[in-house]
Length: 181
Image (cartoon, rainbow, N blue to C red; front, side, top):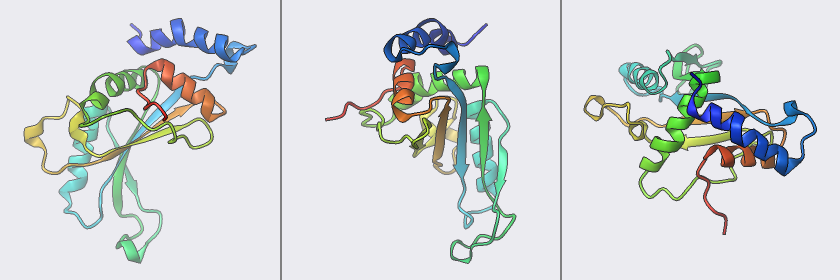
C-alpha cells in the first residue's frame, strides 16, 4: 500500500503542477527525490552523546543512522581527522513520503509559537532545508528517556530546477509556509 502523500502527489499535485506551469512532458514535473536528516554532535560532549543522537534519529526515521566523521583536523573547533561528529539518515521512496507526512502533519504543528516556515530557505536548485531545535517535537520520542535536547537539520531534495517550482511542489504537498508580508 502506498503512503498517503505519495497517492496525493500522483492524484492531485502532479496534475495541479502541470496545469499551473504548463509542462509538456510528465517527466518535467518536479517530485521529491530524497530527504536527509542530520544530527550534529559537539566534539566536547561526552561519548554517549553520539549514541543518544543515533538512538533518537533511528527512532524518528525507522532507519539505522550512519556516523559522520571529520574529514580533516580543525584546531579551533578541537576536532581531529576521523573523529565522529554526527550522524545522518537518507530516506527515499515510501519511507521518505511517510516521514514527510509525519513532519508536516504532526511534528511541525507541535513547535511552540509556530507561524509557518520561511519561504527563503531554498538553496537555488530547488532543495529546501529546515533546522529543528529539538527532537521532542516528534511523537515517537519518549520524553522520559531524553538526556539532552538535540537539534537536527532536515533537507528536502526535489527534482525541481528552480526555487519557485520547488516552492509550488512543497506548498501543494502540504508544507506550512508562512505568508509573506
